[in-house]
Length: 135
Ligand SMILES: [Zn+2]
Image (cartoon, rainbow, N blue to C red; front, side, top):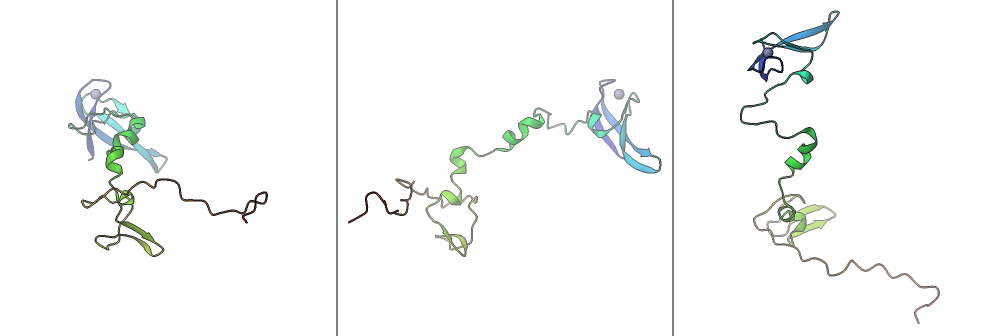
């Protein structure tokens, strides 16, 4: 028997639920969960107030998750190989110019040295100006 911890919305107890298969005819369509303390039945896992883990309070809503997963500050993010002056990109792949090993733009490296920012955007290829042609 599968059982999981919930904080029951009916009796308030932190207790276990009993999973009960839900059948539509002979086809299992899902699972219901029954509070082992008071017998309250939750029709689906979505409705069941599971306690995910005692050490992990449910402080994040679904909307907060992407932000919570963003563990790098901008400064840290820029310590990845793509920002390193040793990072070499050529038609055969990308590698570290120091170790000569293949690397990923997102790798973090202890030998990171920040690449100097280009002073200006790369010059556009010269285009002939029809009104003012070069001599
Ligand atoms: Zn209950």
